Amino acid sequence: MPLNRRKFLKKSAATGAGVAVVSAAGAPAAHAVQAGRPAPKQKRYALTVMGTTDLHGHVFNWDYFKNAEYRDTAGNAQGLARISTLVNQVRAEKGRCNTLLLDAGDTIQGTPLTYYYAKVDPITAKGGPVHPMAQAMNAIGYDAVALGNHEFNYGIETLRAFERQCRFPLLGANAVDAKTLKPAFPPYFMKSFHVKGAPPVKVAVLGLTNPGIAIWDKAYVQGKLAFPGLEEQAAKWVPKLRSMGADVVVVSAHSGSSGTSSYGDQLPYVENSAALVAQQVPGIDAILVGHAHVEIPELKVTNAKTGKTVVLSEPLAFAERLSVFDIDLVFAKGRWSVESVASKVLNSNTVADDKKITRLLSDEHAKVVSYVNQVVGTATATLTTVEARYKDAPIIDLITTVQEDVVRAALAGTSYASLPVISQASPFSRTSEIPAGNVTIRDLSSLYVYDNTLVAKVMTGAQVRAYLEYSAEYFARTAADAVVDVEKLTNAGGRPDYNYDYVSGLSYDIDIAQAPGSRIRNLTFEGAALDDAREFVFAVNNYRANGGGAFPHVASALEVWSESTEIRTRIAEWVTAKGVLDPADFASVDWRLTRDGVPVF
Image 1 (cartoon, one colour):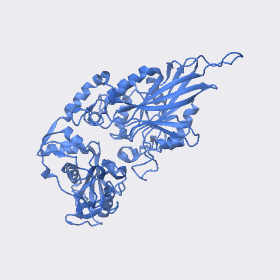
Image 2: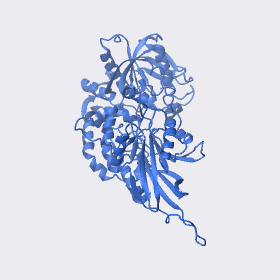
Image 3: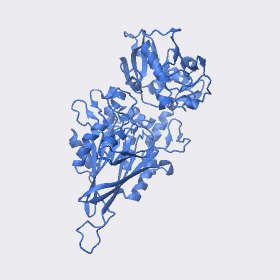
Image 4: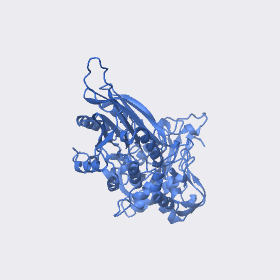
C-alpha cells in the first residue's frame, strides 16, 4: 500500500468511497436448473461512468478576457455549471446509485478565476478561501479526479491545499516520491455497488498523470516528485486492483491517445500514451482520456495480450463536453464480468446552467470580474494578435520588451550584466486585443493566457540560430510562385501556435520557400552578421526553458536567473509604471517571412 494509506482511507471514508445500494435489472439469484423448468435469467447490472477533463478553472459560461458570456463560432458553451445540469440528467435517468463521476485532470489553472485564488487571494493563506473548483466539484459530487500537469503550476503547497479542500481523492499512481518511489497521492479509488440478490460489483478507478510534469514544472517538483511512465505504472497497479476483487477497472489518464510527445527524447516516457496503456496492459475496461484537448466520443483499442476491446473517450476541454461510458455486466460462474462497454459525449450547449452552482460561486465570480477590469494604463493605439502568427506584431514585441527589461534589471551588477539580452515570446492567441484608450488587467491577461514565469539562460549565437530554425518549422513550405493562403501558412505538422517563437534583439528572415532547417537568412545582431560564438542572455518562459516544445539547446543551457512572478503580472506592472502604452516604446521589426529572398507581405 502507498505511504499515505491512512490518509487515503480516511478521505475515502469521508467521500463515501464505500458501498452504494443499487437495484438490479435481472431476475432472482441463479439456482440449479431442475428438470422441466426454464433456465433462470442471468443477473445483469448496468453501470454508467461520466467524465470531464481539462476543466482549467471554467465554472461559468463566461469569458473573463472579453467580460462577456462565452461564445464561439461552433456554438459551444463552457463551465461546470452546465456540466452539473448534464450530470443531474444522467443521474436521474440511470439512478445516482448506478453512476460514477470522474475527471482526468488540469483543474486549478487556466482562467482568471483560478489565478485569483492561487495568487491574489490564495487558498494557502491562513484562514484563506476554499478554491472555487473544490466548491463546485464537491457540490456536483465528483467521485475521483486524476492529477493533471497544470495542477503543479502553482507549486505543491497550493496543490496540497486544494487536495485538502476536496471531498474526493486526487489520484496519481505515477506521481511518486522522488526518494522512495512510493505514491505521493492515492493511486486508485474503489467503490462497491450492491446488487440485490447477487454479490456487489466492485469498481476500481486508477489515476495516471503526465510524465511531462518533470519538465514543465521542474522548479517545483525536482528532487521531490518523480513521474514514471503511464504504461509501466498501469501494468503494476491493474493486476493489484483485480486481485483486490475489482470487477471493473476504469483508468482516468491525463494523457492523450496519439502516442506522441512534445518534449521529444528528453524523457523516456510517452506524453500521450492512453492508447498505449489500453493496448499493452491487460485488465482495463475503459479509459477516460485527458490532456490533448480533443474530442473523442469513442475509440476502441484492442489489447495486444488478451484481444479484448478497451473503450476510450475524451470530452472536449473547458467543460464543453461530458463523456458517458455505459458498462454492462453479467453475473455468471460466481463472478461479475464486463459484457460490453460503449461511450459517447454530451454537449454542454444543450442545457442551461445549474443555478445551484452559479449561486454557490456568485461572490467569487464577482470578485474576479472586478479584479480583471481594473484600469492600469492607457494605450495610444489598438494592438492585436490577428496577424501575429505570420507577421511581426507590436503586441508580441510588448511581451519580449517587458521580459528583456525584467532580466536586465535582475542581472544588473552580476557577471552576466555585460551580455546582450534577447527574448522569446509566442503568439498564444489569435483574438487578443488591447484597445486604444483604457487598458485593463483583462486586456493584458488575454495577451498572455498562461501562468508562465521568466527564466534567463545563456546561449551562443550558433544555438540561437538552431533555435530559430526549429521554430521556423512552424510554417508550411510555400513555393515562390504559389498563392499564399494565410490559413494554410502556419501550423505545419500540427505544431500549435504556442510552439512558434519570436526572438527579439536580432534581425532575420524566414524563407518559407526553403526546406525546414535551411530557412533562417540574413541573421544579424546590431547590424552585423551573427557571431556563432557570441554569448547572449536569453529571456524565456519556464515552459520553454524546461524543454516544452522540444526546442534545441535551451533546456540544457546554463540558467543564471529565474523567478516565480508570472510574466502576465510583469506585463501589468510594466504598463502600470509607464502609464501610457505607446508602441514607439517597444515595437520593432525583428523578422519577416520571405520566399527566395522576396518578402511575403
